[in-house]
Amino acid sequence: MQDRESEDATGGQLSRRQLVKYAGVGATLAATGPFVGVEAAQADPDRQDQTKAGSARPDNRSWRAGDHHIHSEYSGDFDTSTNPPTFRKGADAVYPIVTNAIMAKNFGLTWAMCTDHGGPTHSKVNLEQAYPDLLRSRRLVPEVLQFWGMEFDAPAMDHHTLMIPRHADEAKQLFELESRFAKRDPFPADPGRDTEAKMVEFLKVARNMPHKPLVIAHHTSRSATGLGVYGQDLPHEFRNGNDAAPDVYVGFEGAPGHQAAPLNGGARGGYGNHPTYGGYDQATARVGGLWDALLGEGRHWWITATSDSHVHWSRGGADFWPGEYSKTYVLARQEYRDIMDGLRHGRIFVTTGDLITRLDVTASSQGRSAEMGETITVSRRNRTDVDVEIRFRPPAGTNANGDRPQVRRVDLIVGQITGPSADRDADTNPTTSVVARFGPGDWRQQGADHVIRHTLRNVDTDSYLRVRGTSTDEAEPLADGLESPWSDLWFYSNPVFVRVR
Image (cartoon, rainbow, N blue to C red; front, side, top):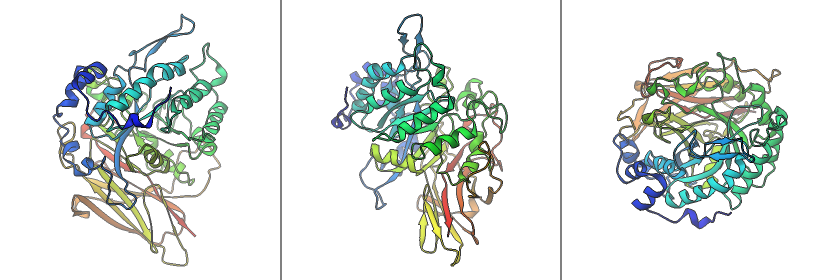
């Protein structure tokens, strides 16, 4: 079973009959009529230009919103009283693949990924049942680049994105990796699949494939029982995996999905043991925490934001539609290959509630400059001040809740790179701090953008800088309760690295 390149370029407009057949009446109405409260997706000229060929940049890249953690009706369950087990669709997530694509398009996404749960013999279900539906969805909704992959049952760890590059044998590649390494795929169960060594073996195999996949950890601290008290995912496992495949195992979700849970009385993100902070995992939200510990070793380790969409909150679920609340923006051309390249190399920022639609962070010194995911090298022999420009763009209209969110503060965070830690489970970087806070009086408007400039004086050691912003007055994101997620919005950049030589 092979996908043809032409299948992504056909089917420009969906007929109502096709939509009813494949996605249901609700999705048909959504796709053929505007939503109330998505004015930002329709009115923002930057978003309207996302699918066009051109860009003001010489590389023709622009910020493209997406989501790499979305479930369809193929997140089902298995009747293990039969041999082989019998798969039943719709037990855990309920929407057809094309419904998710339609809703992603409606909420301003230009790329998305189907990440269904595994299970005993699920590799065959993916290959024989789900993949043909993905091909159909690509034909019906060509405006959204739709990646193939799964929510991988990572050995010895919680779930991970396994994103397969777009190529003719993508279905076979996923089948090989899932059938060989997913810990829940064997029937009967095989305890030997659920070890740290098997996870490292999986990553080494993936690293050596001609089409390198991407692996990104999901809801990193959902099983944590306290701040810095981890559950399924331990700091040394991230280090081991990144060491084994640094260009494959590249990050974790900064903002997990299930953000709509408080609207139905649940814990934000499904974090029932220890909460999220402003909707973000503790590993990301804590300044000087686990993310900073990894960056402080010089690791290229990125964060993303996803919906983890299973069932929409209006139907009693805990989820927003793809793009309705959380967005992962990638600086890329509207091409499968370049979207993956942007994710692999950290050209990423994330936001919730459409607090912003664009973010550029640039570090400059001695005639050189670097952006998110890049490194600037400065010489000790010259003046080692580093000029930082932060440029962000608010939405032109309202978000999906009908609000016009306002950025109340932007923080510049800097940490030192001190090399590998002797403690593989270290989860702090004591050199990291908020070095500057900016309010509306500190930025100036330049066209549709707000611009902040700041100089880091006498940078004499390898460092990194990153940026976050919020709609709140909280100096640090507070532990989440049952407040509406729409009242607690944050954005985060990925880091820019500074090397001193």
